[in-house]
Image (tube, rainbow, N blue to C red; front, side):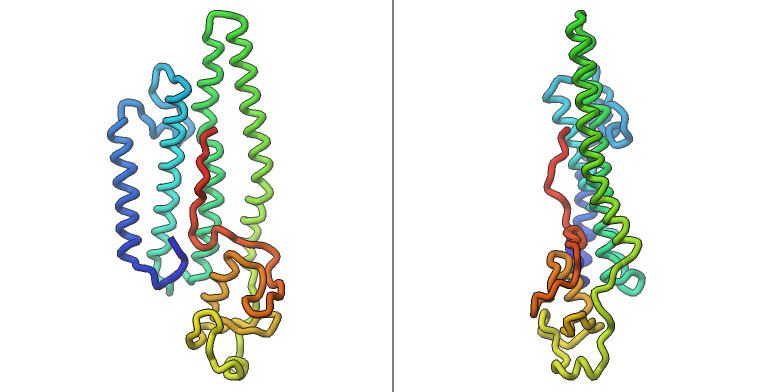
Length: 242
């Protein structure tokens, strides 16, 4: 998925249908195990889970969550530009991806906790003790991960709420001084933006540039103090298995 308005809306619609169909087919195939329970922090209806079954359940749930949030991004991409601007879509993509990663971090907890505590079902003091210790260790690691991600999430919320600007609208005279041509797309300016370094670009072009960079494309003056790597609609390749 990209932020460019020129991308095919038909392809986006087909992707949305594919993601929905794949998810429904997967859950229908394994409906007896109620894998969808994991999405709402419940345990699937499996009497006994070994290590590989836990990995299977957690892995499937993680992919489904990725599909779900990719579907949300498709819906945003399909929104007409007169209802939601190019720049606004970028902020929504960024927020959705951060929410997705946070949600995926918590979803595996019930499944893994049940499996680890299951050691306590062994008919021995050692088994019960080991189960409790593993469960506590897992929760501690999850808390550390939570606080490690909290700073990034708060920064994303701040950016989403404040919507920082990279410059001001350029005047016609300023645009004419550079022949009314954007240095990025090599076409006539569309909503020209004047940066603090006095270089002018299309709003769409420079917004897409600052999704990955912090400096001006021409003089390398630092314009932004952060890189919003999810504003282009990308999805993390990380697999949340614990």
